Amino acid sequence: MTKLKEENLKSPWDVDVDVYIYAEDHDPPFRLESYLQTAPDGDLVFKNRRRPGFIVKFHLHDETGEGYLFPKASDEDEALWSRAGDGCPPDNYGEQWEEFKVQRIIHNRQTLVVRNLNQTTTHFGYTLRVTKDDGKTYRDLDPGGDNQNGNWN
Image (cartoon, rainbow, N blue to C red; front, side, top):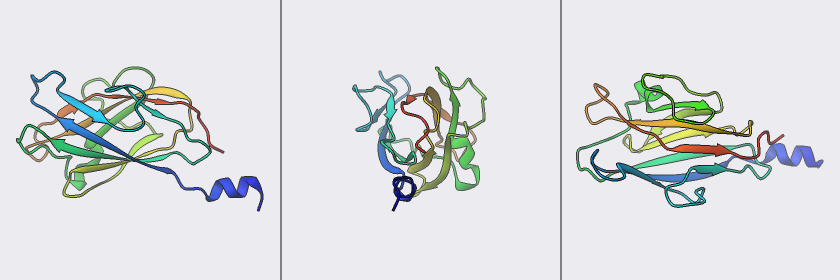
């Protein structure tokens, strides 16, 4: 089998990211934990290592006890806003960058599954959005990301 055909048979990396949400006046109001971070509370750093990107599972842990969840499946596009470049998407952005998009919401709305194609080497911003009232209001969590090695093929 040629090397190119072998690479095309590889699957995306599966990544788990724990998202801990605290009271809004807590410092910090949320925190991420993943082996993709190079520093505690740092950006998620994505390196393909010759695989076709990533499947990222954001697992929500509501430390407030207020019942925060990701949106209903019918509103899954509200769970994530993303864009290429530094900085988080602005308020009311409402879009997803083609390389970092929602795939689905699972596990009783406690896990958000996102596909990161990682085809462009760039920093990017994204906002995870959670709700405790079925989408009447949202709480925005603004971590950062870094796609480091671009197109895998």
